[in-house]
Length: 333
Image (cartoon, rainbow, N blue to C red; front, side, top):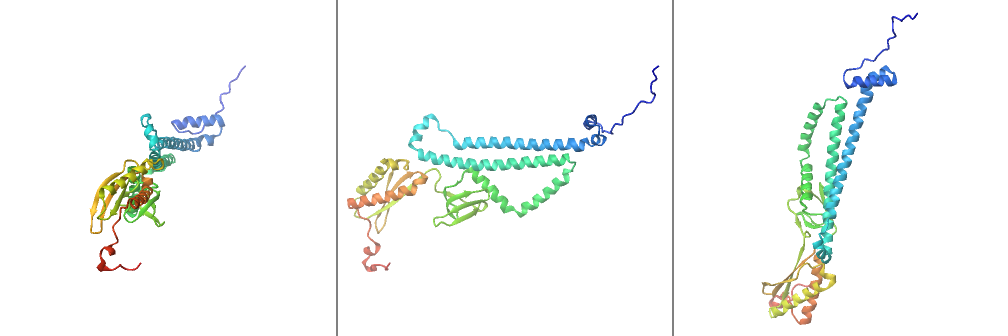
């Protein structure tokens, strides 16, 4: 005869809250059999898992955005030359090389700024989500951050202005590393360009650090192409047509040479008589060159034109003291 036990054994169940935590609580209790672990499942398992997921997602988003920015900037910096323009590329390889290098440097700078912005935004969003998971009220933190931001904004106005000016200079491509620029207080070759400070080295080798927010005007001597303008004085008795023809022939001959053809972008222009003074007559010659070869072409042209003038007997104006005997030979040097 089977006798049923009127009192069935009761298994203690943990006190789980309603909702998704209830299911997790029961699942943990069924797997482990530990009441305290099941009751703390949300704190010990669910929240750390969500925080870990937020961190992983933030890192993945940051990695994907950084990768996309690098790919875009690399494609923009390298660039491609259309098939129709490849013959022109072969004749002006030095110009395209310089333009490509400038474009690459500018793309890398913009890419670095974009990656920093992406990292800052991703970190900020992930931090706020993690604080929310920990049950921290974000309203006082946001209000405090706003007050601190306003205080820092008033105290660091110059710093903010430097950064904003640096961003616009990079986006507008006002100048880049290697350019010869005039920034008002300082001029020279740009050695480094940051969001806050631009570093220049002048002709004497001195290094200048110029805050971007203090730059009111920029004169770029090496952007696009350069102009060599030669003012050549000759005596009043000079045959001007012969002198101008000699200047033009020297300049055309220099451009015809293979070593100099890539540096001179257009045919030299004889601009004629620039001025007439008591000392002599000034003739002007203009040549369009690459930015890197401006001074090299100018020096070579001066040398060759001087030699041609000497060969053709074209005289330059005499010294001022020789024209005015009443003034004497002039001060001793």
